[in-house]
Length: 290
Image 1 (cartoon, rainbow, N blue to C red):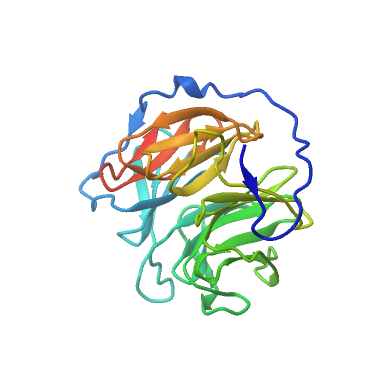
Image 2 (image 1 turned 30 degrees about the vertical axis):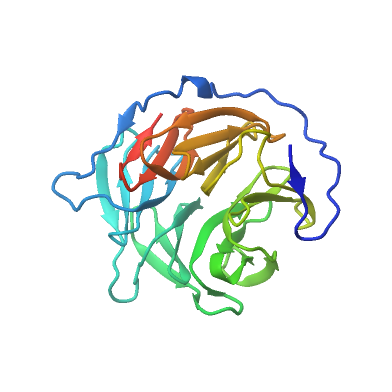
């Protein structure tokens, strides 16, 4: 495994135990379900970005970036409804990433975060354009630290991760990075995907860098990662746009499997039934369920 330390701190010894794979990713060869590019006469799905699943209902939330809205499908990928509006107070534009949080969904979009109920009722908007506190330049990945409910947002063009309290007050910054695109948590680590190298930085929960993984496994380099997901066994699933695949690594960043997909994957998640849900841009423009 190739590692480096671009932030300048000494990495500590990797003490992660080797764990079982858990999900049989080798069985994910062909998609079980592919949602239609058009659904019941609605506008075509186009330029799909983030995806998340409501663990209680199995509903799938998709960022339809081209149409400036969020579209919701049930667990069988049947279209249900959409929400978002580029006009007025909401002003949803280029939605990118989601996190479901206490029966609400937080959405990153141009220069801020939108706060909705899960049935699409607009609640509030957080942030504005800029480089100060609670100011953003094209934020992307967003995640909740369940240990304290802090909200972490990849502030992409400001080259940092902003940390907010659960009531959306600024707390602190993590980084400096080059191109921070996604952030996730395990019980032990905070993972930040920096797409410039590409690289995943692992911090402990005191925000101290532990190590930085660049090549993501000898002979299994990830070329253009767009986002990632950590499953219940702490395996890392990376949507690699250039290789048209989901690259999967164990907690020690050893390659487990690649799931080939048609089109360029932009986002990936795993639901409570161990199904891998992938967003694809360009060629396919529809969610795939493996």
